[in-house]
Every structure is written in structure tokens, then in C-alpha cells.
Image (cartoon, rainbow, N blue to C red):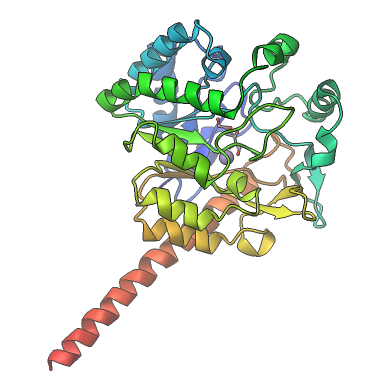
Length: 373
Ligand code: DNO
Ligand code: MN
């Protein structure tokens, strides 16, 4: 059975109360994090326990953390990385003590995911996130100003003002980090933490780059099937896995998302899935996010769910971003209503696939019985 969940930003920062998440049918998990712990520091046990207790008191489970972010010194490969890796291992142990099974992370330099529009208006009056490539061609400062001015008090993860204040030196530190060096630094990180993950029974699931292309001259190494193969080979074990984000992979039309799922699902390397749809605008990689339905976007969500069904996917899944609809003006991409609609739709597809294949098995059995008569 797929374990369906919903991302939640914590009672301080998320306008959506846990009791509403509990009311979404077929949603049993919260995907959470301690958002205020600075990147690189150990997550204290008592904070993890408090989060877990809060989620469980609401009748939900907390088994997936998104994200424990990776310090840039690890990605750059500075000598200080060893201490940050030790801290990461301690965080893994602390999370394991409270039953966490999967850690989602990303390996994008400097920034997490990037959009150019936070309230992109769709023809039906709803708004969503969009990415228009021409808008990131200005200076970095112009892009930053554009992104932060639209976010209405919410910050995109990775775009926190205190982090961004020292951007120039961060960019300088990445000057000689190309794709191969970044990959070598990822291998160093994974090889250092994997024994702890295996011992603690926590699966690492790297999120695909979003958008899956180099930005601001920084390298990106989690963009497509070839990249995923390189990462899988860094440590061949189900503990070194992927967060298959259908939207971010699908943002490159050359990526065949169902094929990627079949390849890595068959190797038991998909502990976590983000399911969402996007709609291309033109053919230069511009897109806006859309409702989850296949008919609303450029991705065939049935084929994606079918690929997961066919590889017997039984990991964790969550709807990814949603639109703002019905008057809700929430955290961009993370409102309640459209994500709940998306979750229901995904559950519908999964139920149909499960029952459809059970019917086929029955038909086969009946035909065989008839033949015997
Ligand atoms: C984008 C989102 C991201 C993701 C982080 C993972 O598709 O899902 O916010 O959570 O990049 O670290
Ligand atoms: Mn995602």
C-alpha cells in the first residue's frame, strides 16, 4: 500500500491546522521538518519528539522528513564538510530514535527550487507557481528581488533572507565546482553517511533538481535518468534512493517520467514520490504548475501511477504543489484545497489500478478454471 501524506510547515508557520489534514480522506502521514534549525546543525531529540508527538496527537503519522538540508560546505567539498557530515549522521540517529524512515534532501548548490511567478493566474482565476526562463536572465540581484517581492511574507525554502545576504562569497566558493566535482562531493557525502542509514534503517531520498537545468551558472546533477544512474552507483543499496518528483523531472520534456520510475522502482530505489502536474508554455522549458489531473497539464498522471503500480511501489507519496483556489491565499504552492483535491485524485487512480489488476487476475483464474472443465 502506498503511504499517502501531506506536507506541513509546523504550527508556527503553516496556516493549515493538523486537524484539517486529518480530515483529508486517505491521508495518514504528515511530511514535516524542523524548519528553524540552521543548516548543518544537529536536530535535537527533544524537538523531534515534540513534532512527532504533535502530529500523532492529531491522529497522523510522521515517518518522512523533508528536508534535512545539506550544508553548502559539503556540496563545495571544503575541509569543514567532515564536521557537517558528523552532524548529519547524528541527526539521522536522532530521527531514527523517533521512527523516521525516510529523509528527503536535495543536492542543488546555493538555492532550493526556483520559480519566477508565485501567483501566476490561470484562466479559471486560480493562481499557481510558474517558471519563465527569460525572467532569470537578469542579474542575480534582480532575480532575488523579483522572487522575494512576490512571496507575501512566505519564503521559498532555500531563499531565506539571512542565507541570501552573503550570496557573493557563496558563489565565489562554488567557482571551481563543476558537475563532476559536485558529483564527487555527493559521493563522498553518501559514502560517509550510508552505513549509519543502514544501521538506523533510514532511507535517503534525494529530490530531483527543480527546474532540472543549470541556473545562475551553478551545476546541477539530479536532472535526468543518466544523473540518477550516476548517483545510484555511488552506493548501491535501497538506502541510497530518490524522491521522484514527477513535476520537477517532467519540467524537462525529454524526461520520460514513467520510464524513470520503472527503472529505479525495479531496483527498490524510490522510497518517496512527489506527485504533481505541470503545463508547458511554449517549447523553451517555460511552465506553470497545474491541478494534478492529467487533463489539466502536460504529464499523464495515469501513466505515472501505473508505472508505480507496476513496480509494486509501497513507499511514501504526497501531492506536491497545488493552486490557490476558492479564495485561499496560502503559502505559494502549499494551500489546503487544491493539494487535498490532488491527493484524492491520486488515491482514485491508485485504487482503480489496484482493483483493475485484481480483476485481471480473477479473469485469468476463471479462464484457467473453465479450461480445466
Ligand atoms: C519542489 C518541492 C521542493 C522540495 C525540496 C526538497 O518540487 O517539492 O520544495 O521539497 O527541494 O529538498
Ligand atoms: Mn517536489
